[in-house]
Image (cartoon, rainbow, N blue to C red; front, side):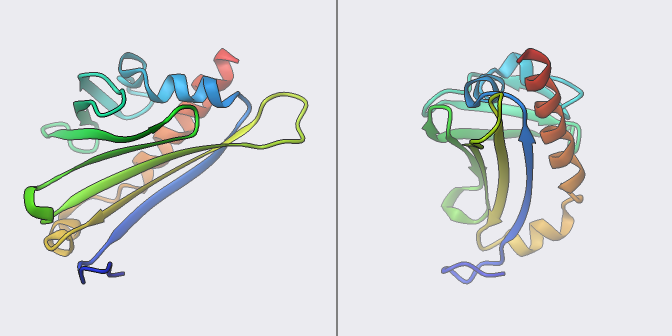
Length: 152
């Protein structure tokens, strides 16, 4: 798939229905201490997850590498975007978290949708060298679901 700039794009996404409120799921997604959890596939986070904040994240998928990320969108209890990559748009990863209420249930229920898009002039080359990220996305989403439902 190519974007407007002609760069190759790769996407990874996952969605889960969670028996918890949007506020409960949001609280997990924005708590760096809670996210540092092997159940979620995150080894370490340095910094805060807040509007405009920059932080570094180490994941089990690539434990030797710190991903430098910035929170570029922060719509309370609804939508958040983490973005990182190389200068000049050579390569970028944009991870979007969306929480949507699912009405019609006796208890609060939401759908958490997570999608990461990799783009930029070097994305084709870099994406070919990346491991399959789908299992780590599934692990993260399953872990958030379990944590949110346990705390509800």
